[in-house]
Structures are given as C-alpha cells and as structure tokens.
Image (cartoon, helix red, strand yellow):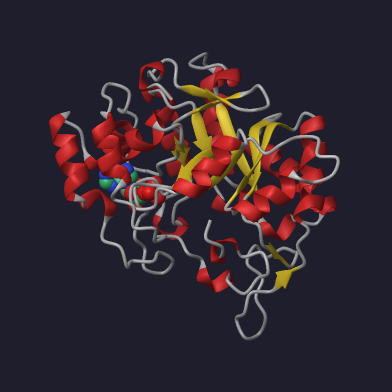
Length: 329
Ligand code: A2P
C-alpha cells in the first residue's frame, strides 16, 4: 500500500465486501481490576477528538456500555457521524453454537445502545461450554471445552449480516487451515473480511499475511506495541518491543517514538493496528502516525526484527482440537 494515501482525515482501507476500515483503532481490552469505572468512556471520547474512528471492542472486555455511551454522546452532539465510526465486536467462545450467535450479537448491540456494529468477528476458534460463565472451569480448575463447528458458527454470523446487525464479518486468531475451512465452505455467502491476529515487529506474520493478501483478507494486528507484559498471560521470553534499539533509532530520525515506528510499520504494509491505551497522552501519541513514512530500507530492517515468537500464546487452551497456534501459520 502506498503510504501517501494515509492521512488523519482519510485513513481507511477497503474490505472485500465493499465496506472500509480505519487502519488504526483504539484497543478496548484492559485489566478490569486496574481500570476505574468510566475509563473506557473517557478514552473513547478523547480518542474521537484526537481523530480515531475505529474501536476494537468485545463483550468480554466488559466495557461495551461505556464505549457505546461515549459513541452515542459524540454522535448526538454532532462531533461525529455514526457512519464515520467503525466498531468491531466479537463473538466469545461460549457462544459458538449457531443458535447462540445472534443473541450474543444482540446483547452487544443492546449494551452499546447501537443498531449495528461495523464488524463482528469470531474472537477465538476454540469453543467453551455455553452458559453464564465466560471461562467455564471444572472442579479441578480445568477449562471446559465444547465441540466446535466453525462452519456452522460462520453460517450463523452470515445470517446476522443479512439481518443488518453487522456490516462486515471476520475472524480472529485463525490459522491458515481454519481460514481455508471457511473460504472453502460449500455455499459460502460472505467471506471473512479480516483476520485479527498478533502482529508487530517481533512477530511480523509474513506467511499468514501473504495468505491473507492472496485471499483479500485484511490482517488486523493486535498487541501492535508488544502487549502490557502482564506475566499472568504474556509470554515474556522476548524483551520489551518498545525498547528495541532499531525501532528507537529509526524513530529518532523522524522525531518519533518506537511506538510510532511499530504502528507505522504495520499500517504501511496494509496491516490495521489496534493499540490499546487507557492513558490520555499515549492515546494521543499513538494516533500520530500520519505525518511521516518509513523508507523501504527501514521497512526491511524492521521486518528483520521478526523473532517468530508470540507474546500471546494462550497455552492453557492448547489441548483444544482447534487451538490455532500449533500450525506453522
Ligand atoms: P496504557 O494503557 O497505560 O497506555 P498493546 O496494544 O500492544 O497490547 O500494548 C498495550 C500496552 O502498551 C498497554 O499496557 C499500554 O498501557 C501500553 N502503551 C500504549 N501506548 C503506549 C506508548 N505509546 N508507549 C508505551 N506504552 C504504551
């Protein structure tokens, strides 16, 4: 993608279904225990003022009521039009059985107070036992998995798009085999427009990105800044991404931070980024990626930082038959 097409005012990329996605979004996933009530609400309002038009949310982030309220208020006061905003919601793993898909999306819409989401994606290709618990466990603290039929779940998603509850459909954390399962499904009505996966200079995903490009699937990079490094769920074998000397030195040339360089790297190769921040200065900082561009040599140097090691391995689910990260890509 030519970097010249990206600007504060115009930074959307086309999706295969005719819709468009802003290439940078605010990630809304945070540690609830450390996040005061009202934080997500304030962050979304600020982000809209700064220029963000894309919000990456989920039912399991437990803040959709705040995100929705902020969006509705900014639309109501005329700051922004609903059509300019792109909200991504996610189907959690306890709602994979087809009959639970639409109710899950309707629950998200009700919580948001919106008529539709712009994108609805399968959050993870493994299923848990349906019920009130998002993380069902047995008496031995083992996760209770559930049978998974990704094609049947996908057909239920297709019906949600047809009913106007979401504009676009996608997946997250799918490997190549799982993407092919959907793409080759007999009678496929709507293709996934995106696959949201971990992607940053230490995990650049060259093979999956190639496959996605060949199939008109946008890659959306989560943890584009290398995560919060919370040892309870992050693989800390890799050093902190934002302390990388190459990223810092490239940034210095443009009076930019290593965060800017990491985000710009992905945006410039057509990978959407959803940096999470609940800090006003960093929310503002992370959006400033449209006033510089990286040379081909710099893009190559950053690509060469790839260590092919995930920060987000989710090994506690690795025994599920659809655990996606055992395949090469
Ligand atoms: P905070 O919410 O306090 O800003 P990722 O998007 O890769 O998951 O990274 C998110 C983590 O990085 C969060 O802990 C976030 O903390 C922090 N963060 C976000 N933006 C920046 C930045 N520009 N510089 C340093 N850390 C950042």
